[in-house]
Length: 510
Image 1: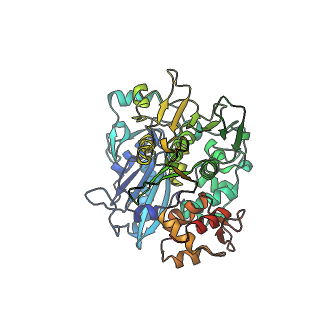
Image 2: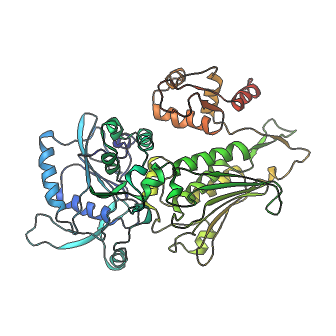
Image 3: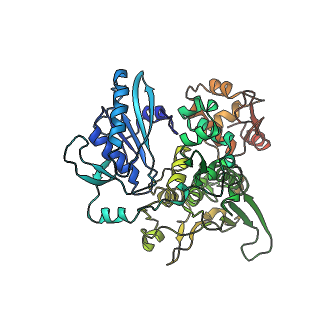
């Protein structure tokens, strides 16, 4: 029995609706479950497979009911035996990762079904029928359907076509995986596996996380494992880095600053975003003589930059030896990555910001980014960029590629108020502070433990406090850890940075 790489209890507590990646079953139904396992194994859109939760009933909108109906404890062994026999009828054989968890004192069986390495897969329409007929199955929205016509032909073209991030890295060894990085990730996403991961060997842990391939005699990390859980992924994937370049006098000038971010993908994404936010984003305030309300606008909205950069990390090719490049000039920020958008996206739709991808280049990278809540997937990045620019009052973004789809370029123009000082404009440079962060900053005098801060703010939900209060304050450069090299230490404290102290002085009366 294996634990899940995600916290299924949180997923159910938040009543996540059925989707392309999750299906709820109130009871053991071998025919329907095997068909859905086959669909997840085929992973038609390279989303990373999915999950089946057995013992969870739903309401009319597809949301999990609370408490769940559960699975009787005396039925669990029987279901596992029947599942083993049923999965042997999938061609080629395919077996999900099984976990038993408890939600609201009810037992649930959770099947983690990652995209298979030997697609396409066929399953019988009925596992108990004497005269079986096998069919290909795929996921369409929240349903499992038989692949017919053009869909079947397209599925057949994916034979043995495993995305690069899910392939074995035969040039690497299991010792190239960092156990501390793996444990930190499991704790951050709230995985049940974190509760006993210390008792597992690195091999067992990597297999549970599906980042290891091969036989016991010849083990290879998967590429995605090295991308997230190696301290130096660029050893295996040259130029898997983010370059941030600031041109003081525009791209034609001779004066520029460059900072290169290397390391695990989630770390370099967060560090580069934090660096850009601290150093290059500022708010302009336009005061009006005829009214009290001032007009406030950021030169570049952080959320638009975040979406564009995370999209680049998600969708770039790690087989190409080109970095992601963020170019910053006074007039715009550009994010360049290679190659361009998938050919299933029409050029006119991409240019107009209406990109909807049929298939994802990096299904496993997307899986890890989603669990870290750095992306949602499902082609939501471009609409979010458009929305963020519009909400800030900025000019619309520009999306560029070429006929060969050799590169992907996102241009974010500067807000009109930040183009240059005018007599009636009063520029002020200040980090973006939400009301929640503001509350915490005014409280944070001296050094505090996380539990002390949370209690003083009257917050009971650890995850809400971390994501809404603590992380935004740290990313804005206003709060820092006393032990930055030991983020999980029991002696960890939090205090204001010099920027945080300056912000507090400037906003003492507000």
